[in-house]
Image (cartoon, rainbow, N blue to C red; front, side):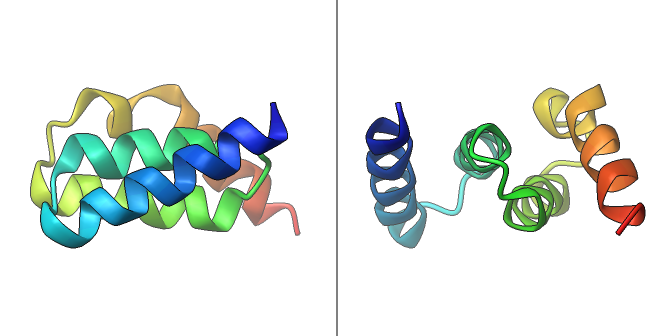
Length: 73
């Protein structure tokens, strides 16, 4: 699973260089969250929200849980 997440990060990162799309940022945020890279995840959720403040993935409970977790450190 770890290798697949790394592949996903690489692939999504390459696409983001050509298309700054909210759904790509949100998907990359989900992959980072799955690999416990919470700061990276949060920054990508925030990027998705800058493009579209109504993005469902970026306004779901996941980003709120990440913010809560990060505030504990």
